[in-house]
View 1 (tube, rainbow, N blue to C red):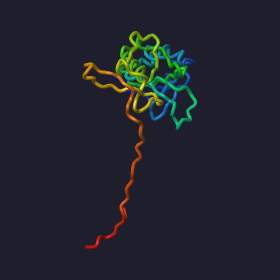
View 2: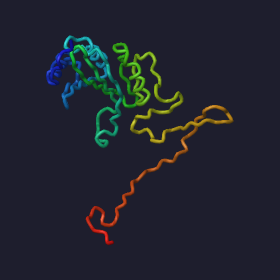
View 3: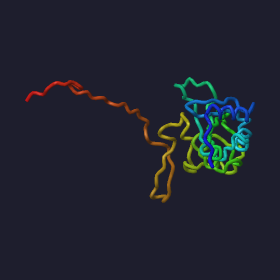
View 4: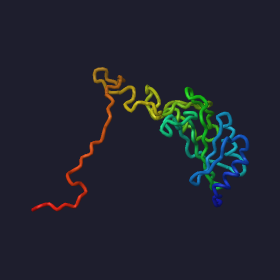
Length: 206
């Protein structure tokens, strides 16, 4: 039988006790508990969250990358890339969010947790494909959403909206070819039209 979920503050205390010095910060916001850890402790913390008696997070339900480069209108001063995971304990009816920042902005890397939860496989491949975050120890880290010849990582904030290359079918070569983007970047400025007496209650003469 599934247990009644404990209050977020109580879960925060439970996780803080279970993790001790392994966690950098444990907080509660909007009714959700978030644990922030350093990359060196990331794998150990995840294993503790899965196995510890008061945690028992059997399922990794989501894992994604985050690019903080433009966060807060560019006033963010911390590391650029992070990996955010959401864990679920079915037996204890509780959830937790875990965030780990990559130590190097130029080469973001964290340990893979695919050995702890097999569901991390495609999640980590997606974060690698879209953000360029490397997962050390992943046995098959390759692109999963973009094409084999794709250049760059499209969810990075500095990735151009038009991309780098475009593809088309070449009838003479009878194959798909890649070429530099021919679309010129443009800015769309909305045009606002206001009629005479807009919003007024004037009567129209017959």
